Amino acid sequence: MSSVTLDEVIDFAETELGKLGTPISGDTALAHDFAISGLDGKEFMESFAANYHVSLEDFDWIDYFGAEGVGFFAPFGLLIYLYQRYVVKIPARDLVELPEITLDHLVLCANRGKWEAPKMHNNRLKTGRGTARPAP
Image 1 (spheres, helix red, strand yellow):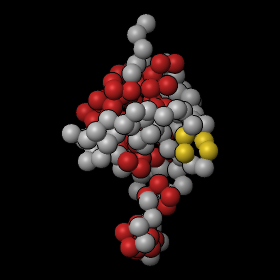
Image 2: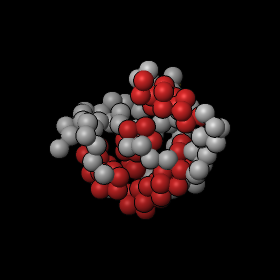
Image 3: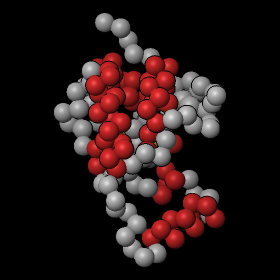
Image 4: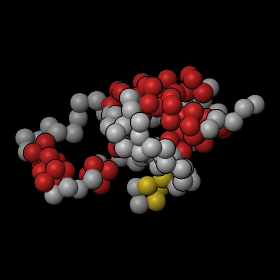
């Protein structure tokens, strides 16, 4: 049985989601860094599971990517978010209360063959640190 590497998962993520303009590492998060949410996150995880033979039996995509089409229903919700994000410069990951799935965690799941919920600490995963790969 071959071991899935971080570079393989990075290549897969870039093929499915596009390249980022910043260096990619094991700490790169799907929702926050690749900016995917809702059904896009669900579809990515299903593609990942099929490609790496990972069982998603205990995976609920809404917990990690949010429900499709919710979040900014309040009239001023979007304005407040944009103000905090771009004027005050608060990172997106600090404004959204969803747990992160990092590329390191995907490597772990691919090598185990099943989805395991990430261990959280201050809204950051504790799955190890990957080496950054520079952006193209």
